[in-house]
Length: 214
Image (cartoon, rainbow, N blue to C red):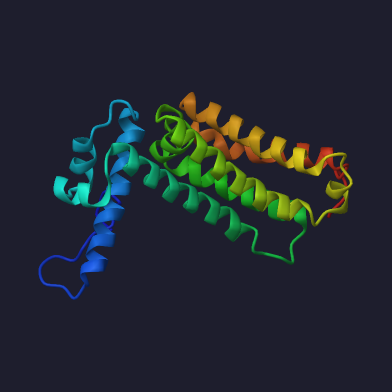
């Protein structure tokens, strides 16, 4: 990693393959896009802004992406995969109670968002500035989170007994998305981890589990 957090290539002669070099350059472009948009917003970000941060040539940019939007969408997908991986890693403790795993996953997700305000802003806010293709991608990503959380809560018989479990999990994930987006929009990304306790408490209340371990 460079001092700026970007994936770096070794200096001078190296034994990396052409494919490895290309992958590293592409990763730098995605990081550059995320950083630039987090700082300036999508509308004000240019390809030149991305190149300046990524320290990659314009020729290399267009070898990877047709335009700014294509690069942004790829950067967004990479961020979504990272955030979803954080959630899945936290849920991997299969011997823990459902509510404990939900709390751990939510806590780690909120901490990951809080750790990088620019990336959080790009992921949660700037996606709406890009156009219909980006909006569709954003909802596909949310569906991925819904699927993961639904799989967890379905282990709880109280959740399965709700009048409409599918609607309940969509309401939960959509509500979390709205809460965190609002905090980031107000520049309060550092407060995101504080949402964990109240959200989990309300889920427990919904399931009638305030004093019951799952």
